Image 1 (tube, rainbow, N blue to C red):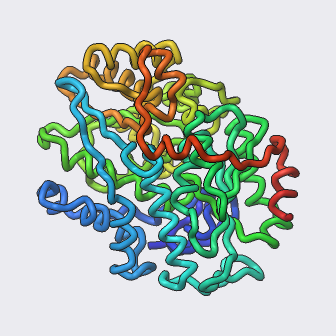
Image 2: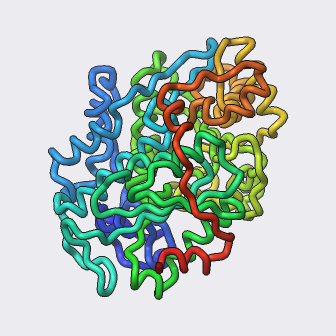
Length: 448
């Protein structure tokens, strides 16, 4: 499998090279040269397969011979070794709980998979280790050459920090917007130390993301530090997010009536992976991009014009993205054919007031507690089902409510019980460096 740039101005690369580079040199995103079709036997008898076997079969065509089968199976096993249950909330809506991993958020899957793939490349287990990736830079076994540079609006930072902590040959630099992530999220990305470095940016997530993109485009910087990205722009972060859509279908009882799936959407990597799974043969009826007021994709589906705008802070802060990077991949899946895209994807905009009301109502009516992102997904799905009486659906509960304690407790009037892992983290000392939202400050830090 080769990967091409969505900007079409760079040479195709292997899976390992795409993982190491992160972003194409022409500033495009890497995309597989074709979409592999899932074995029909796997779909028809999915109940009979373990999650590890399902995940291996899904990802194997994207990796090809880059990573030996035994190594890839071990990577997959370590990626999905926690529960991902489908929980029925009412007679038409179920919740896919993606918060049972080590950092209590859906991004654990992608971060764990990518960190292990990168470790395999640096240790010589992947086929492409030892090759020259950029002029004057070579990846060699045991050599500390890679700096993972990542912007986070909340959960990515903690998941990447946990996934890469202690990985030999990798330094991680995480940019996050000061005061715009929850206390639990901040502790998860600022307290590990070691090879994990947190930069607290006096700006927005979009500022953080712009700084990261500028770093990759800066020739002076990239000539001195080998940079890669662990955001969902990286194929090794993005592609494994397909796994849990297959796990959801495995648990879906009515296989003759595939589910509608509502995905809380910010940077659009998660829903893009789901749409990729659908295009590869997974039975899904329809996708809903559940957006907060940062809803440029909702506008696009109405106007066919994609107009980035400044992000607005909301309760569902991980979705506060005014220029979603991964939407270009959704366009690529459909080869920029708007009617085909529109038939598979719709969008719904949910305000903070509606989010608050939904958290409270779902708890009171169904005794189910959502986080703000899950509430956006629930309400968007509920509205869609009101118009499609013959359908049932799933919303993605992307993070544990404990990651947003102030909002959830204020809305419900009840304390959120802290899992033991969170209690331990909250007592750790925060370690971060404050910088302004200007690229020059990031560049100076990286060159020191």
